[in-house]
Length: 358
DNA sequence: GAAGCGTGGTC
DNA sequence: TGACCAAGCTT
Image (cartoon, rainbow, N blue to C red; front, side, top):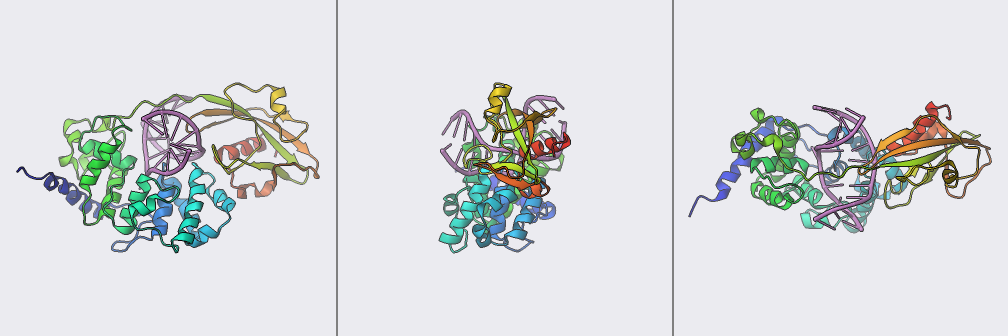
């Protein structure tokens, strides 16, 4: 019988963990050496870090912990407060699921997060990656989280040339073979740190990599070409008109978006639909939140979402102090920063102010 | 399996 | 400037 594969694979953890002990990034959600991380902190950070950089997440993580120190307090918070605190972070379904998850854990689990991958996987907003990551990092389970960093590291280690996302299950199995029984949580974080700091997408720093000797892609000089990814579709450009309504008492009209879909549940500057065809004035006026003397402001607001670009024209109007609307909220202009506007809406507000319609 | 879902940084 | 990329999940 030949030498078991595990003899060689275990050397990956043996090489990586000492490197991690010297080079681990110091991050606010990580436990100090020798301590167990708080599952609430691990969960909150992992959800915030979905498709989002560490630098972007840090201030939000601190703000959430300061305001809601435990999962019980987060569960008890009004949902709109959680959404407003999430504003600017993107992928707002995460905030809706975060709040729902906190309520489930608080109500059904005695404020204790499940300590297994399968138990975590049942909670809203916790998918395959996040369940595996929390199980490993918070509970030291030998699970195999596979995020974008680990996909890249594993694809290079084994020189996997099949394109993603088709190769994902192959990579997950390879990762599973690498996970050590000792310190699996540190191993997962070490793989992510390696991906972020050494095994980088464009210019891998193989000269500094503790796994270079074991890396097939590095040996062949093709590390920078992996992983192969399927081509992405081109983004169309859509058009919209946004209505900036200033009331004589200094309030601005906002509106809450439907719960599902783009910017679901978030406040918005009332606007037309976002269509590929341009809006003519008569059609746009039919979508205004109220009848008023609308003026088109110079310039446009441009923004890019995951799957389309949008060009927004802003119409402004001033209305009397006693104006009301059926569906909408009047927000004092000088408290607009508390409203929790998504970035595209903040851009519209900034544009209106810059054009003198504050 | 594919599409929908944000934002900011980088090259 | 535009395309790519980041600790993905849901339907």
